[in-house]
Each structure stands twice: as structure tokens, then as C-alpha cells.
Length: 151
Length: 151
Length: 151
Length: 151
Image (tube, rainbow over all chains, first blue to last red; front, side, top):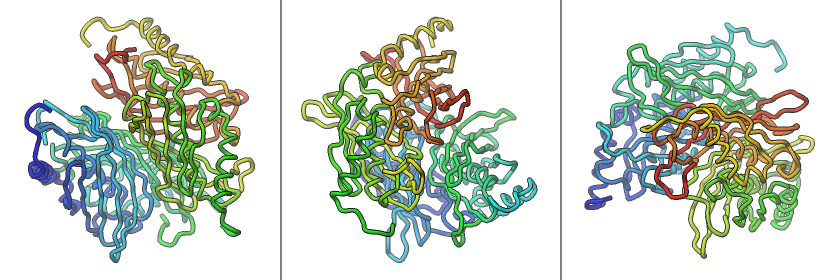
């Protein structure tokens, strides 16, 4: 809050740096595909290692990229040095997550000092057609002055 | 509903068979540790490949085992031939998911014909001490007569 | 499903008739202010009888108009004779619900045969300025062939 | 945290005093029926003015008593002078809320410095038989040093 605001480039680098440390995103095969102030998109190629018993992407994997998209959208608006944690999220699964890839589009609904509400829509893309397959709302918490929780 | 009810052994085999097809559980390194009527537990050793940027287990990985624990707890009460899908879940993250392993304990709150409410508590276990780190409620749907969605 | 689809006028009359039977909306002092296919708005003048201990509108009253806005938005897309029930909802409270009136804007995100996801934004209006104070996602269920549950 | 902890009697008086200021509880006809450390129960006689179109208690009215039960359960553990606000809640509606009265049993799942997770079960009581009709999880926020937000 005090101090200089971050430039768009600094914001992008901040998100990329923190995303790069999320080993779980590498495990999934997810990549950061867009960062802007209040907006983050994450893409996940659909491969067998993220599926559940019917061959769709596991709801937990869908939720994982949606959660990271929400959390990083929130982080774009947090003061330098602060870290982000998810306090809670809810996801509605609307259609089977199947096709070539998933795209989670996260954006901030309302940024507060302590709590930020973000939401994400997840689209399943098949043969160039994009279909909404999940929607999340997430409460993200700004962590300041905690050892090891800085992004 | 009609027809013979499943025995406890048949229920355990049913859950094990379906869990075994969830490639994503293998990716996480999760294993089924308990099955009873209306109850399923899943264990996840904490390893670097499931972590987020601060070294804790990613909220999405926590949610993944909680979702499977809820869904399979629900499936223990579903008629043979039916499949289970998650319609929605909400998870509250209560403490950093850190330590040696996570244990997700899922149980059915109310089983209905179409919708079943299940809940899961996730414990982080460190040096033999178990700490509640997340709580989920999940709405699971009984799918009957859908090709490819049978468990 | 079979049979003629409802006209816009029939849809508006259907929602008005069902809303008129919600005694609780009268208790709150809420009124239906807009109905279109997939969209319903409900307005609530802020009066002392709906407040909590700090003088803001009680979160439950905010949720009540948001829930009705979601449910009726869903009902606009349901076959004649069917009734609507809420299976679950989640609401995030973003700012104190204070001012002259609240406006809940509900809309359908995805309509399915059994389950429909709707969402609502609730705005607090003061001196002509509108501020987002809550956001809800709700899973609505189509009830067909149940005595007494037809809208 | 600093300063003297409240006695059980002081806690009960604190909750009763704040509940007494929730005009909306009076509008509903709800009353506080039990207060203990980390636990609050609220009772609602079922009367026509809280119903929806099928004659059941409106989901919003069910949520209202569950939210107050969660918030006040959380408040029993908050430092003197602090106020409580609900940041978010999710409710699953499990059975029609019908009968003579509803009983919402709220309890704290995890109390934190800023955020407390509480949950509530709501029972519908008819002819002496109690049936679970809803379950809520709620994130409650400790407000300290805000004018007008002290309980």
C-alpha cells in the first residue's frame, strides 16, 4: 500500500516467479497463459495422468488450476512482499472436463485489505470449441509479515 | 434399489476397483486406506511434487483427495451399476497442509436418490500428531444408465 | 419438455405467480423488479426489521433475496409443470449491506435437465450509487411429478 | 487475547445482548435456545410468514438462523470488544424444512485470530421427531477496532 505500486511488468514477473515454484502445477502439466492486473489464466493439456475413473479430468485437478488462477489474480493486486493463501473455495462442476485442454480464467471480484474474492471459469476445449465446464469462487487472504509466505 | 444389496466385501471391491482407475490418484501418490458403508479414507504422503510455492500441499491437491473421499463414501451407498459424479464442493483451508502425510476422512451426511451430501475432514499428520487442516462438503450425483459412467 | 415452450409473457406470469406465494418475500418487503428468460431481479428496501446487530441487512436476508433471484432465474428455463428447489448455495459477503435498498440480480450460468447453476450479484444502493455487496452461486433442482412442488 | 478471559456467564450475556439487537431474528420469530463456549443454538417456530411457495420454510430463512448460530458460536471465542461478521457461508438443503419448528445447532470447527470456521446443522422437528434438513459451513471474521462493529 505504502511504497511504489508495481508496474504491469513487475506484476507479470511476480506471478510467473511464484507460479514457477508451484511444483504441483508442473506435476499437472499446467502453464500460465495470461497475466494482467486482476486477471490470470492457466492452461492444462488433458492427459491421462490427470483423469478420474471415467476418463474425464478429475474434479480436483480442475479445481487445482482454478484455485491457482483465482489466487494469482488476487495476488496481482496485493502489496509487494505479501503472500497469498486460499481460505476457501467452492466449485460447481457443470460438464465433463474432456477434450484437448482446459483453460481456467480467474479474475478478482472484490479486493479487500485482508480478503479478496476471486472467481474462475474453466473451459474445456475440444476441436476449437470452448465449453464452460466449471465455475469457482474463492476467498484469498493477504498474508503480510509471515516467514516463508511471501510471493 | 431393486435387486440384491451389495455385501461389505462387494462394496470394498467396488470402491477399490474404481479408485484404481483414477489415474490422478496415482499421480498424486494417494492410496485408499479405509472403506466402510458410508465412509472412505484416503491417505497422501506429502512429497515435493504436490506442493505450492510455500512448500505446503497445494489446496487443489488437498481438495482432490477430499473430493475422492466424499465421492467414494457416497458411492458405497449407491445401487450397483450406478456411477458417481461430483456436482459441487466447497473446501475451507484451516491450516497449512504440512507434515509427513495427509489423511482425508469422507463420510455421507445424507444419501438421496439423485443427490448425496458427503463431507470430508483432512488431517495433516506430523510426528504422530494429527491436525485438522481442511473441511469439505460435496454434493455427489448418482448417475444411472449413462454410457461410460458406471462404478 | 414435450409440448409448447412458454412465451415470454407466460414466463413472466409464472414467476410472478410463484413469487407471490413466497410469504417470506412479503415478510422481508421484497418485490420482483425484473423477469426475462434466464434472468430475475429482486429489490429489497432497507428497513430496520431486516437488520442485524450493527444495523446492516442480516446476511440471511441478503441471501434470501439472492436465493429467490437464482431460483426464479432457473425456473424461467424449466418445463411447464416443474417446480424449483434449491439444493445448495454459497454466498460471499463483500461489503456491509447498507443504504436505501438492495438489488439482487440473478442469472442462469448453465441449465441442465436436473440441475441448474445460477448466480446472483447483490448491490447495495445509497444516494444513487450502487455497490456490489454479495455474490452467490446456487444449484437449483428441477422437480417434476412431485405433489405440491410445481411452479 | 490479552486481558481477562470472559466467564461462561459473561459469554452467555454477550451473545444474548447481541442477538437481542438482531431485529431480523425478531422478524423471523427466532429465539436463542442454548449458548456455551463454541456452541450456539437457535430455534425457529415454523409459521406461514417464513415460508416459500410450496409451504416449506424458505431456504433463506433456514440460512438466516444457521448463519446467526455460526456467527454467535464464533463470537463466544472472540476477545471482548471484537465484533463478528460473516465473510461467506455455504448451505446444503437436504430435506424440506417442514414441521413445527427448526433447530439450528452451530459450533466452531476452528477458531483463528482473523478467521473462524463454524458449521451448523439445522433440524426440522415434527411430532417430536428431528430430521436433518440443512448443513452450513461459515467463515466468520473477527472485527477489532471498527466503529459500530463490536459485540
